[in-house]
Image 1: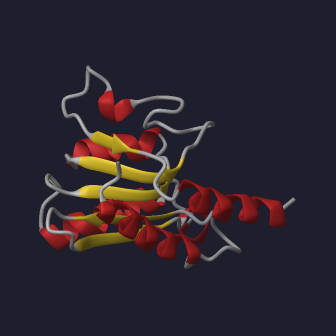
Image 2 (image 1 turned 90 degrees about the vertical axis):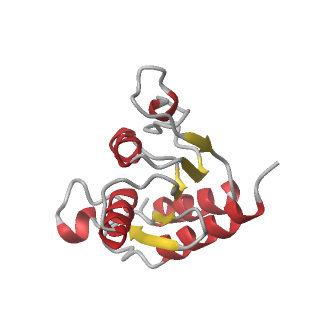
Length: 152
């Protein structure tokens, strides 16, 4: 059973994804929420817009949350994303010490939270992260499918 807040948080991430400049970047959105449910960071893909290979929604949101908190340690926080994080973003979540990653659509090509790899739950990791996938999965997947359909 899903915690009621997860769907609300994914809707916030979806709003970020929809605000992405679709002429430039894939519409993926993320938010970082603290233990009290307050949004500390928001992000959307900016790789193309800013010519930044690390400009993934998750990294943008984690950076903003760290700045807002005044610490790189984001313990007690949840990273919420519309698409399963890739290896870079899953690694960033681990290194930021978030407690949990919640995401919408699974990524069978590059997902690193259970699909292709499972970095947050790797027994060799220095920190373990709870993973909750598939929250509002159809809505998150539809946003991406529509984006790529328009480009074909």
